[in-house]
Image (cartoon, rainbow, N blue to C red):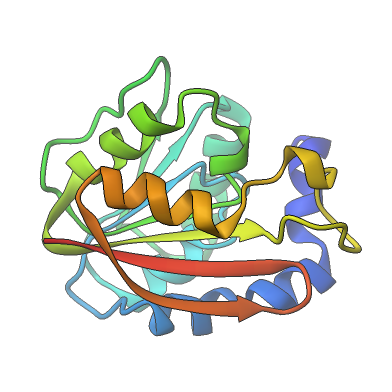
Length: 184
C-alpha cells in the first residue's frame, strides 16, 4: 500500500474512529448499501462489508488504494465490495443507490464543496443518511493544519443547502467529529 495511505492505519487514529462502532452508530445494518467516498485504505469499507451483505462501494481516486482494498477484502473473504474509480466531479454510481454515504476526512480536501455535497446527496435514497467525519477546526495531535480544516457549522450549512437535514452529531476522540444528515 502506498505510504500516504499508511497514516490511515495509525492505531491511535483507528481507536478514535472506531469504524465498526461508528458505522453502527450512524445506522448501518445488514441489507443496507453504503458508499464510502474517499475510501483510502478501506478503514471503513472493510468493516462495513462485514456488517452488511449488500454492496459496499469504495469510491477512490487512487488506483493503488482501490487495489489494496480489493486485496484485503479477498483475504477476509468479503465479496460485496465494489471498487469505483473516481475521476472528475461525478461518481459512477446510480442515483438513489445508497442507504448511507460516508465521507471520512474528505470534505476539507474538496475545492467545490457545494457541488460535491450535491453529488453526494444524489447517491442517497430518500431517508438515506450522509455521515461526515472531519477533524475539529483547531490544532489537534493529528491531521492537517487548523486553517485547512472545515468547521462543523460550514458542514451543517453545506448539507442543509443540499436538502439534507441534520440528524446526529457526536465526537470521535480528541481529533474528530461526526455529523449525520438525512435526505428528506
